[in-house]
Image: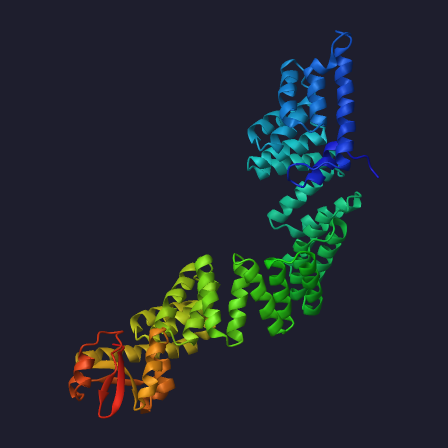
Length: 504
């Protein structure tokens, strides 16, 4: 295998974070030791009795070797000020600056190092790191490409270029660079995990899962890694395999996150009861796990546990107010419960947060139509027509119905009519139940379909447009007091109990 420099090995092991040393620290020690010998050789002829620990060049090198960067930094600066412009000083100063997040200093020393030794690959690598830290990815890439011309086996440069390629969407180039890294003898877990990410981008879920497992095999098993393996197995259509990863994750580290991952695996395997148990446990252990609360709410909805689902939907949209899907699912839940007015707000929020979420526009249009707000519903459907050409015939029929209803509304209002929903029953025992459901926010139309004995019950109690003055008392005076959206109190007339809701 080709000889590899100290700093490039250290660089790859660091993986863009403050450096961890291990074996690479040993190699770094050897590199720094050779530098210290060179420094000693430079100083000994002029002052053979010099106390080396007081020599800033030797002391800075020693402290850098010991990873005491705060103490090494001033010594290396003194060495530089004393006229030592060698790479043994400039490159460590660049490294320290990059690790400290000081881009200007890193660029200063890195540029001086490259100017002095343009053929030095380590100098180009660290100069590129400083440039990237400053946000200049183009200049960083130029340095690394120049370094690659000097040596195609510099591990740090290969990794850096691979990550830049991933960031810019050049997936094939990134994959090739990662494979080249492996051919250089560096076969670490993070490389397989990056390859997994590239496979995910292409929807190659089984390949992504296998790369991830190779990464786990090299890094060691953790609960988080097992959860990701489970998610990839679900996407690959292998829920039974995902269950195995989920169970191992729970055994390794029982937590809200691991129970949540297990719950998703149970759901993918159509084991809904087990999924509910796991997801409830996840939210119980960690109420902040909004993703698992969202899954729990939807699973409860599927299983008909409507009231419990509603509580979790409410908590979720409050915790994650910028999630359009959360608002849409909450709106669908409220619409299903017959709470049309309450569903309008989350449906509107979903459209506002994601204008391309067409389902949210459909639901919003349906709610506006149900509330008799035809002008607004027409605007929503018109926008849908512009976006969904394939659904144009269906949308045209919907639009025609809305326009007809709007025209009817205008004519009825001009005739002094009001549009009403009506609940009528002769059973006094159900009045309390009706009142309780209306108070709980259940839509009037839903309650009418459930309890009213009138002929309009199948239409949600919709008796259409009526002239209040043509109604008998006390119904007439009750209706005349209603404003649009109001629900009347219970009115008894001719042995029956009546409730009205004015729509328009």
